[in-house]
Image 1 (spheres, rainbow, N blue to C red):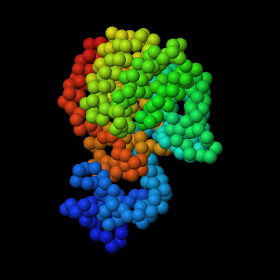
Image 2: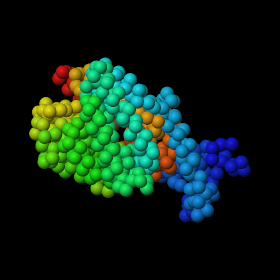
Image 3: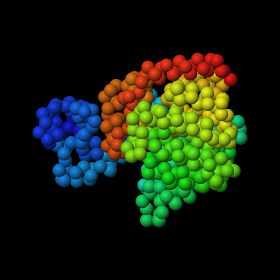
Image 4: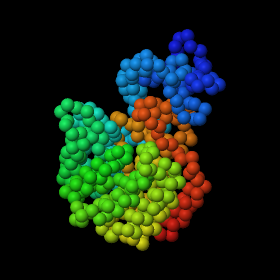
Amino acid sequence: MKLGTKADEPIGKVVTDGNGRKPTRTPRFFSLNLLGRNVEPSNSGKERQIGAGGTTPNNQQQHNAERSTPWLMSAFEAAGNWAFLHVNFLKQWVVGAAAEDAIKQAQKLNEKGSSAIICCLGEHIKEKAVVDEMMQEYRRLLPMLGSEIRAGRIHTETSIAIRPSPFGSDVVDSTVVDARAYSKTNMEELVKLAKENGVLVWMDMEGSHFTDYTLEVYKELQAKYGNVGIALQANLVRTADDMRSLMTAPELTQNRAYVRLVKGIYKETVNAYEAWNENHKNFSDLIGIAFKESDAGFKVAVGTHHAGHMLEALELSKDYPKEKFEIQTLMGVRDDLTDLLRSNGYAVTVYVPYGKKAFAYSVRRMMRSPEKMSTMLPMVVSIFKAAYKILYGSEPVGVPTDMDSSELKSKERELRTYLNGTAQ
């Protein structure tokens, strides 16, 4: 019996949308009956939800689905986590399940002259017990990193990445009166422990509803401890103002802000640059603001795999030198450009995620890695994309349809020419 079929169902079934439009026949092999519901591609290319009869579920069907959701969700997510940690062509973006895997990768990067940002995966945790497990993981990780740094086996600028939701901002528990205060307390404990072990802490951004809170916590912790950087996302209209505010924040006059510019992986629809070309332009504008409008004490990291943005940052860093500047990349994404920069003497830090929760992060990276997706069966990509939507309520952001591939290749040639003429 095929996944999602009943014994008396044909392999092909008629799918209707309940609006009288002409039905289409979709192979049952390509539908998913996970979490008590079916998801099939519509003619527009976007998944739509259907009930057992091919129309919008009625109340009884919804009740049955909700009743069957938890264990089915857990089972499929567990299968996805396993696949992205153990299947050769899928385990490209997450280094492994354990902290030791990340440390081994950091050692390899150190041999090449690069530092690592190490992150234990997990997001939007609602159970306090799971937050406690995440805290214990970082309490174990940080002393290990400190020991490796002192022994010279990993780079002296090795760092970790944290964000609010794995540390309690979404927790629903009778013992937690204020979830965001609870998350802040947890993150401060880790920042303090990181400082004791000579480790920098990056605060990653999540969805825009966390932006104000994350910035508030960042400024307080950086002012107090001085070992914290923060990611700012180019897909938000507000980011230029946020960065200017960090440049001049009175509480950051002694411990200056350290900003990592990224495009943003979360899908935003309010006060956001949704089109790729708008986001792309804003990212360039933000790089310019970071260098041109700040003094020499401001610290800048540019997280990108676009050769054009790399070139912009390298050129501006010559004209407007900063206390700290580096390019940051993700493990498994455009490793060729990372190697190119490194071989020409430029500082590159690589984001190295690990942990058992590999599915969500890996699918997001897969959807933004066309060179990797081209090696996979389209059916595999479609299944993971549909499963992600079911599990997390939204589609992973894919390769922009308005991206100019010829322009990208031209920028890569320009970057190589620039590096050949300015090797460090």
